[in-house]
Image (cartoon, rainbow, N blue to C red; front, side):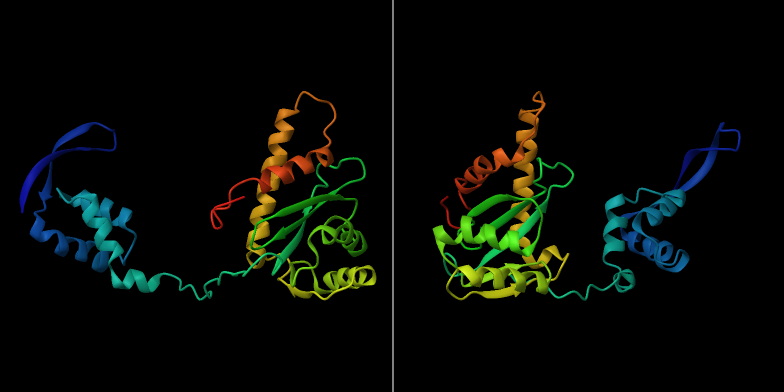
Length: 247
């Protein structure tokens, strides 16, 4: 190590020459960082470690302090441990093997009496079906499925929803009153979007499309998003799916 003269500042912010700083050579980097980071400062972050090192030494690069702190085993033990189990992807084997349904809340921008959008999505093909709802009652949701989905595609083997179990059971009871067949219900956790990641992503796409239509019609006094839903549904369904390599 050698000494260099660096300017420093006193309390009156006047430059004072004559402050000596030790020049750190490469072979001393580890010893300096070990002392400053571990012994003297109690394993603080690399920025505080670097600031303390630069106060006394010259020539020790930021990358060296950052790498030292990132490999410090004491600092790694201090980090909170993530005990959350990794999410397992849901794999569908074909069309209508699993479908998901969710509701998009549009009460912030109602269209006459319509305040919700029902979003039905096939998990395998990523096919979307959208229709407006006045309210989110089980009877109205079931009626939409019976009139807008099942006549064209039939019943899915699995119908998944993140709404409450009582809500979904009531929907199924209403469906079975007017539609023959069997369907298995799977409930995700309410207000837990990770259990229905695919349709939550689809909801985001629908909301982005609605925002785009709203911007295009910003000069119009009438904002009728119920009229936009068929076009939005078409736009989503003609997009090429990265998994299937086709629309």
